[in-house]
Length: 430
Length: 171
Image (cartoon, rainbow over all chains, first blue to last red; front, side, top):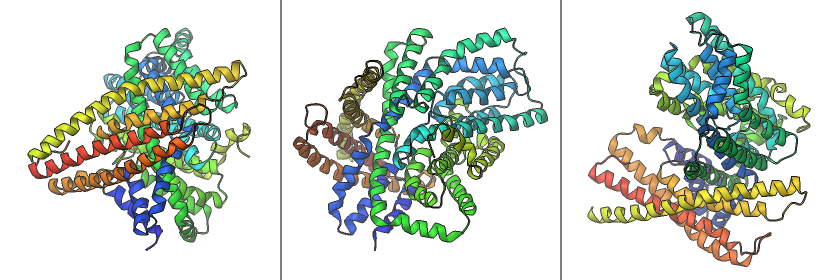
């Protein structure tokens, strides 16, 4: 028996329902014990700590907090108003408003779940009242919410950057065009469906004056992505500093300007972000510990040999890896999936000449779309709880949108320029 | 079964208190973390005079924040797992499986808690790089984290055990 067995053991443990944090420690830990390598167990412990004790990771609790504050601060409402003033008059107006608001929201928040719950609770009832089927409204909310972690800031990309030692700024820059592409593709299929099924128009065409008013309302919230991205991509702030500034900005906005948030609500909101990030931090720590055993065991090299043996063509291997990631994404959240698979798959493809940033985007976009795929897509469950529609029903209604998103995944895979142009222009990659 | 009930009552109380204290402190730590980083941004970009300590202090605060809320998060079921199999098994098998999985988690946390005490004690030998305290006071967070998580998993294991015998739906 060799150390390599911990990988199958790990797979079995997560498939039978063990929380991933524990599985990531149980599998390598028990193999070390069986092989009389007990002395390395404190090393495993130490690596969890070292993995968590990180300044770049602090951006995770801060971006979560900023998103939560924006959400409670009535900012969602002003984004939706702005979207509606632009798109409400076209056929399928509210469906387009839903997608466009997700794109705007994505610049403020790095989480698909926050997007679904914030926009869904407002737009699903509004769409139903306007004559859409509720399952369609829930499906489009879930499908468009995956733009959240693709357009920066993005929790998933911070995790990827940290576990895989890639620049966060480069990943943020690289996610910009793919995120917009997903949004545009969703709007394109919505237009086709709107013409075919005669979707309703939401409102009469807004005058430029009304649009100007709506834009003024959305101006301050929409300054957030400008500050965050401008600061990070311009090399002024580190992502962690930018995330702290985003928190401060959101606090000022919602406490003093929109005044929709009260001081006494803050402890609960802060704790919500603390709990959500504690889970992620422990998972990242366990992943770093897991990674040390991966490197002790040469399992990555064995796996690389195996993958390379499957086909000579990089294109074919990228196709296969996308299928694998998609299947994994059906069952597992994007964050944990990246933590588990990144260290194993990343080096294989990078050694074949795929740019680390390009591979990061392929993996992130694919697994993010997985958040909206049945049977275990996280945002499907959130969409179900905000709409009251069954997960099964939403799962069927979302299929056309998923088809479009799969198409985008392959475009991103085979046309590196889609993700690489912006970071190249900014000098963040060679 | 009465002994299990008593133990559950006691553990439930301990875990409630730990969560109450943890959540009472954690949000303050988050607020101080934000303030510390903002101070550093101000010092660095406005006064051009970066301080040596904010990053290390903020990291220590983050570790304590995590340690204090990890157990309540675990208790609430926030730890990600693929529950397709336990959800689709017949009742008795599902409870048995959940019990076994929770027992493995207990075992892991026993090992981690044990090492964390040693880790804490060794921490007195090194001092933080930028402020005058032994690292042990940061390392202590890991002991708090794992011990509180251990208590939560023992409570969960007893609940599953009880459900297995009494036939209640595990919460």
